[in-house]
Amino acid sequence: MSDSSITRRDFMVKTAQGAALAATGGLLWAYLLRQEAKAQPYALRPPGALAEKDFNAACIKCGQCVNACPPDILKLAPAGGDLPIGTPYFTPRSGACIMCPDIPCLKACPTGALAPELTDINQARMGLAVIDIENCLSWKGLRCEICYRDCPIRGKAIWLETDPRGLSKHAMFRPIVNSDACTGCGICERSCPTEVAAIRILPRELVQGKMGEHYRIGWKDTGKITEDFKPAASAPEAPKAPDGKAPGVDYLNQGGL
Amino acid sequence: MSAIGEYSRTDALNSVDKVHARGFAARLWTWRYIVLRRLTQFGILLLFFGTAHWAWHYPAKMPLLSGNLSASEFIGLVPMADPFAVLQIFLTGHVLQQKVMLGAAIVMAFYLLVGGRVFCAWVCPVNMVTDLSGWLRARLPIPPMFHVSRNIRYFVLAASLILSALTGLAAFEWVSPVGMMHREIIFGLGAGGMALAAIFLFDLLILKNGWCGHLCPLGGFWSLVGRSAQLRVRFDKDTCTHCGECARVCPEPQVLNLKRLEETGYVVSGECSNCGRCTGLCPEGSLAFDFRPLIRAHARRD
Image: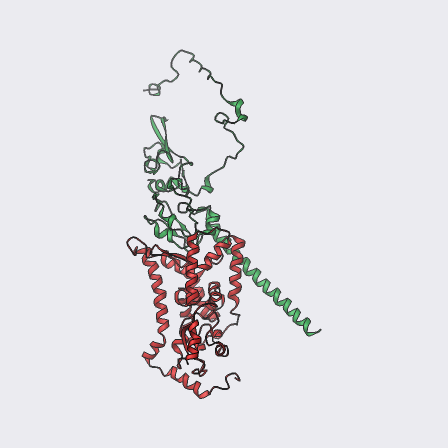
């Protein structure tokens, strides 16, 4: 065997060793990154944040949004925590976004991870309020409605469904979240009086469904396809009560009173 | 050693004696750059910390120095950003804002002037940890465990760029102990201390100057930038006695290749961090900071 073939073999072995080292190291590193970014579904981001995957790519972890936040609710996720390392988040129960009209956190972002396209704070979508109706005082029949009253866009993001006969003898005022208007600021979660908040902010991807384009709400749709399902021009008359009395009998007069 | 045949052994030994015979005051003067480096490192941290926690501002209502080493803004006017972090984010495919690009350009221009790895020795907070580890190791009988190439950092640098493109995440920024330490001091503690403890022990027991001198891709990045930097350590071959005290304290001794220095008249390698250990220590005054365009002029004048 000549010298040159030995050097060639050496070179091949060295190359293979280097490649193996690089591949193993690279795989480990990539695994670490995946693990770190996997915690993402639970992070609530400042207003204007890009979709989580893009946000993770764009955020430079500088904390200028944290410094710019007037109520000081933003934090940077520390190493070893549940959230992607170094990225800003907030916890509504301890500190909710007060929805500053000038959005200083977004203005402080140098990379565009908080997208400057957002100019109206009411259009922010930090998360979505979700009500646990089993533990909500209002849904149980007590008078509370604090979330409704504290909501910065009251009546639009949270409205009250009233039901005069919801519970045996008195009315109910059930708070309902409108996902079209809720910004996810978390003021409702912050002010909810139950031991563990019955209204909570979750990242939208975790709770929000999508109907799909092919369904038609036939009685609202203006398209041609649903023409057949439109109600007739004159609505059919309601059938008369059989005994001539009014159909509604006041329930207070019923039973053994 | 044939290369240093023309130098007198007595002169060299005299130089060594000069270093060791220094009194306390002279020794403090030897450490002047170390003191200055600690002051800048802590000072920069303090500026960030004060802005974040005590709302330091100048002028009225403008945050003094908001952010951290990844990206920041000085008095609401001068954006700054880590060019290496920006490069990684660029490779993830994110379209960057002008502000951060301008910030990266400003920082880049500064380090092109004063030397890329000036970041490592004068700004990076991890340097305090590794300096402590190196100082301790020099005083403990810890034999080297193995030798690895100092070029590994360039491979780690390449890997972090490739992985940024492949995973869509700024690969080094997500695991960087530099970022962890700075962020956690300014914005709240987490498990970053464990990473620093690991680096400390690695440098102390496993590989001398292991993190800063072998592995850190950020150091590798700044080494590449530093090749065209202007502020350099000038070498005066006429006064040098080849005592070797400079190389003994240098964390990157390969940059003090005296044969090479004699040809060039200054430290060419970008791996030099301008830490000033050698210039402070040299008993003959053969090493000193100087700007590259002036170095030749100095040589001619001498």
